[in-house]
Image (cartoon, rainbow, N blue to C red; front, side, top):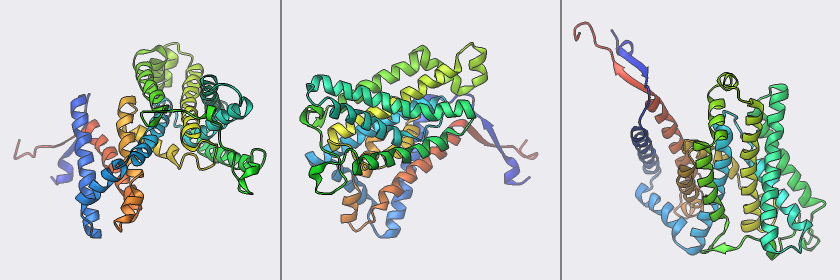
Length: 357
């Protein structure tokens, strides 16, 4: 009997939280070791590189603020994506939902410029949720009606949303004071989120939403229905659930949360609406949500780690290392953590030979 014949793979019944956490930690350490070997081959000291990643993203008030700004946006986008993912609705459209949420917030800022900040900012946030949610509902309704792939439709709608913002920049919302550049006017002070402890107040909103979503998904009726529908639509129907209603609510919340992220990014970070609003973080959030196992509190930690990696690229270049190294490290973490899922869900053993038996 060959070694291949002796290998037996069996599905685990239920892995404990402790064993899953330990497996993930081992996977991350393995990713760091593998990335370190690549750095050594390239002629760099991996300890110096890892130290540079941490210090460059946390060495000054400005770098800390930039890292936290990225963390805030990644966390809230991950929250939004996770709602749809739990239902097995593969929403790859966070990028577009962010832009449409930012558009809705900007529409409120320009339509009601004289409102006090205490009224205008919540109105902008609500508009961000509504516009982002509606943008997410479009592919959901198309899927329900025509059985299309939501992955493809949500992905395509990202580019439609960005093209729409570019049209606004060059057309109806073009700032006359921009000296011919395709730019939208900056927000007035009453449309800008204030800072709290040096970081825009969106961090408070984000932490509140993390708690609310953790409670909602674990203890509420709609959270239970979303999980059941994600496991089996047949089971959900047999249990008497209105699957269409649950689907639309989940997708609305998913896109709405991404839209709130767009509002905060436009209001607090860019202080305007621009086609470079997200920097591709809508796609990165798909990774952070998945690596966090769709658990809201864990998303904060994963988003912070990825924010440090993303904001260290210029510092890595100053060491003579290509900025792509940060992307390589991200890819290694994804590869090893997703690979560890196999060992969480399955057990590998060797069958005994006749002599051993």
